Amino acid sequence: MSRFERRALDPSHLRPRRTAFTFPSSIPKHWLAGSPTQSHFFNAINLFVVSFEEFMVRVMRDRLPELKEDTEFSRQVRGFMGQEATHSYVHEKFLNNLREQGYQIEGYLSASERIFTHWFEKGLGQRVSMSMIAGFEHLTALLAEIVLADQMMKPAEPFMAELWEWHAAEEIEHKEMAFELLRRTSRSYLLRMAGVLLGGVVVLGFIGTGMVMLLRQDGELWRKRTWRDFKALLFGPSRMALRSLGIFLEYFRPGFHPNQRDNYSLAESVFQRAK
Ligand SMILES: [Fe+2]
Ligand SMILES: [Fe+2]
Picture 1 (cartoon, rainbow, N blue to C red):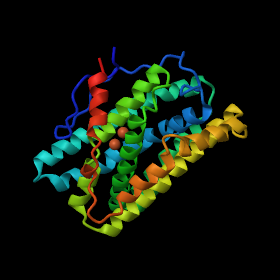
Picture 2 (cartoon, rainbow, N blue to C red):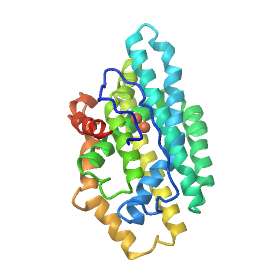
Picture 3 (cartoon, rainbow, N blue to C red):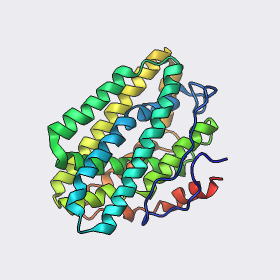
Picture 4 (cartoon, protein in one colour):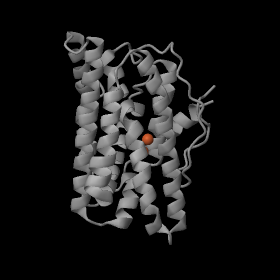
């Protein structure tokens, strides 16, 4: 039985799917291909998206009054917010598994909460935060495309495979929303660029720090296989580093729009597979 609602992809009517995710304690620490490096790459994302997705919802909710004339678009933004809030809620559930497995994650979690709330939301303000969110959403859609196209979750523990495939598919489904919201509130190319660069630094910083922290707690950080797996993840058959860079740079084209990338069929296949 699928742990998320079986509903066809529909980017023009966004709303969260019902979910029933549980994460039994039988899920191993290194749930992706038995590899600490690959598992902690996704665990690190899990750690910071909980507060990042809540931050996105707050910033976008604050923009809603500006859209009151545009009821159809406001409804779509609300659907987007519902999906992100559900992602945050489900990923938060998995944090308990990490705690039970003995990982010390509270410091990281409170630091990420502080950074998004105080540094970005209050420090940099709503406009820059919105632009960073649009850039970040480009990066998540990029990663979602690679995860699904390369079937990266094939060797994963089944509960975890379902979690990440569901999240990746909804990221593709709503990939336009943050970009569109930014476009409706600012046409500044410079602001858009600042956002994606900041988003890139945030993503790399949080993934890198999270991975180092978890690998160190496992005593795996300086093992040869950790670095071999890391090299394989970035430069192996799926050439994640090069492909990510290529897709990342597309955002710099002045006429760029997320819907120019044809990747809906990848998300569609996840929702069709769900039973
Ligand atoms: Fe999400
Ligand atoms: Fe998203």
